[in-house]
Image (tube, rainbow, N blue to C red; front, side, top):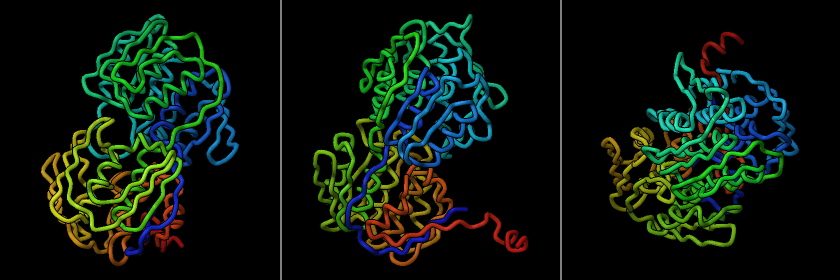
Length: 431
């Protein structure tokens, strides 16, 4: 068990450099299966989700060279046509991109149902709809997804997604790149990491247009060649440090960002009373007074991201007045609220809405990271609280934040990481 121990009450001061985008990396890495040659990829975040995907690719026969912690060379030219290890696939949500990648390269796929954070049902029916529209036969059986192209041919097709789905948009793009015809994705998601995946594939020889709009066209090509690519900065990591500065206090400059990607977060923090200053590739957030109440409704990009809802929820918990959060993406993303209430917050949840009565202070407690972003929120709360906070199940946090402890310490946070046995009594007797 990984825990974070936090001594709160210290303002955050200084600069933090943002890593590559998790949500882009976990799509780009499986997409390297389509490339006949060496992909040199920079700005790859060194996080547990990425390490799991690299282990899966390596087991499949990919040659991976790490030139530095954040620069990789990946050669999938001689990857085996095999089933990815179930024990690895089930530990990461983004493993479903292997379906599109294997279907595109081998014309068939067998991938275990994915794992990852557990905050409610997240069906992959839109992925399946897309693959079927492209001409694949898809079935689910025994905890696996089976997909195949009849007669070894994917003709492509028109996909109209019933809901805006980031994962389905990216998976269909990956599967369509080497199809024999053209695939059109309507009601596509527009997130920055979708544009990044399209740019990566195009740099390797794909023909994708419209990424960043609600209609994406993928014209199938015969093959992809190797090349160089640099992953965009992580929008949610940047937003997390911005929210931390606003909640905890102090002045933090967040570097290596694309400010346009952070517009909705910057606007919300300004609305709450934080001072937000934008530069070409950096943003400074300073808490100059107690935050004010606000309302947030999570929506697909360019709306307010659901992945920032818990972090801003901590800001609301400490703001003056009553704030309201409406969750427009996931039904059960409010599990972190009961953990915040253990620290003195006053939050009432009703299905997809939370009413947050601001309090002047939070107090340290023992809380759990319910998922990746909820875990980040618990850390922010611990940094803002009086006394000591212990965040349990912190392994969730390390799925998406590179060097989280080191970066926070550099800002003046009193935080440390400890690893404890899952069963301390058993470990004591064993010793």
